[in-house]
Figure 1: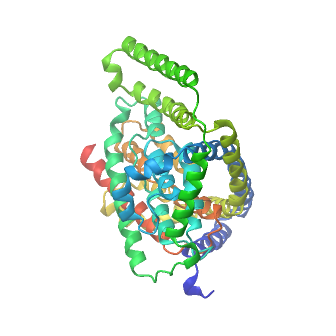
Figure 2 (figure 1 turned 30 degrees about the vertical axis):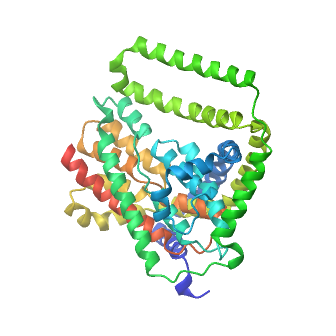
Figure 3 (figure 1 turned 60 degrees about the vertical axis):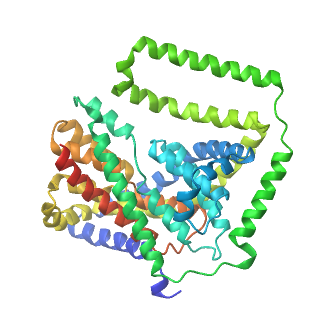
Length: 437
C-alpha cells in the first residue's frame, strides 16, 4: 500500500507518539509519559472489558427486535431521509434500522445503548462491503454523524451544573441542540464532499445490496414463520401489568403536580426511566410477536464478547497516544500556538484545552468541564465548556472502537469528515454561547 492510500489516522497517531516523546524529553517529563503509556493501555483494556456487559445486553435485545420484524418497521418510518443519506444500503436491511437506533440513543443521551447499536450497524454495513478492511462511503458517513449526533438533553452536563449551584442548569439545552445540529450538518456535507472526490469501488456482484436484502428478507420471513404468538392469557397478563405501570406513573405525577413536568428533577428522572422503559418495550414487542425472548436474547448476546475482544488493540493504540500526548505537555503547547486564532472568535484561552482534549478523551474533557463549572459556576467560561461538552464527541475513541470492531484499517475520509464536524461544533458553541449567555 503506498503512502497516498494510508489512512490519515496513521500519521496523526505516529505524530502524537513522536511529538510527545520529543517534548517530554525537552520538559523533563519522560517518567510521566512512561507512566501515561502503561496507564493508557490498562485503561483501554479495562474499558473494553467493561463494555462487554452493555454490548451483550443490547445486542441481545436488538436480536429480539430483529427476529420480531421490528427493524423492518423502523426502516419504513425513516425511509425517505435514510435512503437519501445512505443510498448504498437497502432500506429494509438491518444496517439501516441499527443506524437509526444508534442515532436516537445518542440524541437521548443513552450512551450505554448507543455504542452496542452502533457496533451492530457497523457489522451489518460490513456485510455490504466489497473491500474488507476498507471503510465504505456509508461507514464514513455513519462515523461522521455519530461523532456529531444531535443531542436533545445533555443530562450529565446538566447534573454537574446543578450540583455546582447553577440557578438554571438546564439553560444549556438550547445552545447544545443548535450546536449539534450545525455539527451534524457539517459532518454530512463534509462526508458527501469527500466521497464525491474519490473513486467509488464497484460492488462485487456476489454481495450486492439487492441480493443481501433479498437474503435477509428470506431469513426474517423464515424466522417469523417459526414464531408462536403467546396465548390470550399471556397477552392479558402483560397488558394488565402495563396498565398498572401506567396507572402508577400517572398517580406519581399527580402527586408532584403539573409544574414538576417542567422542572430539572423531571428531566433527571426521565433519563433514569428511559432505559428500563426502552428495554421493556423491546422485550414486550418481541414477546407479543411470538419471539422466545430469553433464548433469542442469550444467542444475540454472544456477539458482545467477540466484539469487545476485537476492539482492544485499537483502543490500546489510541489511549496510549492520548495519554502520552497529554502527559508530555504537548497539549499545552498546542493551546498556546492556537490561542491567537481562538481569540478571533471570542473563545477564552481557558476553554482551549477543553476544545483540544474533547476529540481525544471523553473522560479528560468531562474532568476539565467539571472543574471549571465547580470553580466558576456562573461564568461565561462555565457556560461555554458545558455547551462544548454536550455538543461534541470523542472522535478518536469512536473511530477506534467502531472501525476496530469490523477490522477496518483503511478509514479513508472518515477522520477528516469527523474533525470538520468537531471544529464546526466548537465554533458554533462559542458563537451561540456569546449570543444566548
